[in-house]
Amino acid sequence: MKITYYTRNNCQLCDKGEIELALALDYFEDITIEFIDIDQSDELQQKYMLEVPVVAHGDTIIQSGRLDFVTIFEYLEQHSTRK
Image (cartoon, rainbow, N blue to C red; front, side, top):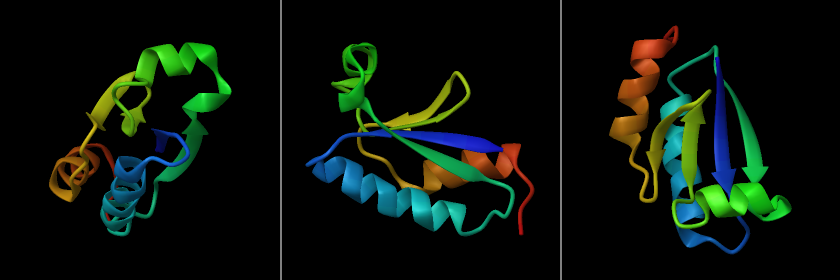
């Protein structure tokens, strides 16, 4: 399973969200994460500028803005193989 993490530099919410995401991912063995800096693409800036950080699974946005362990964990638990 692949998760995408949309982020940007100098974003405190992104830094905090990365910690929440890492905590949730620690419980699962079959998940990879791709980090994408939205500042590298005008299209991604338009799409996610007001929402970063964004955790997505394919076209599904798991959570955006203020991320929390519980929301991410519950989604992953339903869609992944747990350790």
